[in-house]
Length: 328
Figure (cartoon, rainbow, N blue to C red):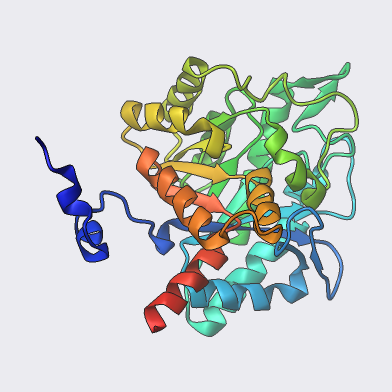
């Protein structure tokens, strides 16, 4: 008989042989930055998550630095929207101002914080789609130059990584070329490589004011029934020059994460999305789940499946819990 329970007899023994660890430095915290002044408003469908105006960013930057998380991913929520999403690539757009402000704050504090800029048009277009509309459909190729312009604007503002999330075919290659010819060959691209059309995004669309005005995004985001297609998308991003790949959402797609880890040697990220976060918060507030324990189990599962990086709204909560534990 194999006595497998021998290594489970105590907490110290279990810790000794644990195969997976959650690293605070591998967690990325998303932030929504909104036009206006003196704004810190909670997203109703995402308890504990706030939208900040640029002048209120210092408080959340201080918290992220104190928590020693891996970095932040920024989403801009502009006051002005138009058919071409011009605020996405405006030099003084809300995303660009937020990047500059965070880098300025970090310089003043002599600290470093990795800034990832989400690159898409949906938050900036009046119609809410991720590209240029032509006859009611998103024109893939006409949208690519605008994504490249948005990436350039973000990098010029100081972004460390750009993350194209539109699922336009060829968007990684378009951005890679634009960065290279403009002197930013050293800037990495994190591709939203396998991004599925998912109902789990609903709270995010409230936070980013980015729901499509007509139709939906199933014509460019992936069908959640397809796993092999996800591997094709991941391989395409890698071939186009992505430095980091991503699977989004995370919780219902761990099979895809596991398969992606077997396929690529690139760093692999997962996005623990807004709906996944909201479900945990709602269950915890109703007394149905122990929030600390369920978040620990979820984050561990993401890393165990093969993720190297986890983008999650739980990042700061997790970091605070770890600090509290270490102080006991």
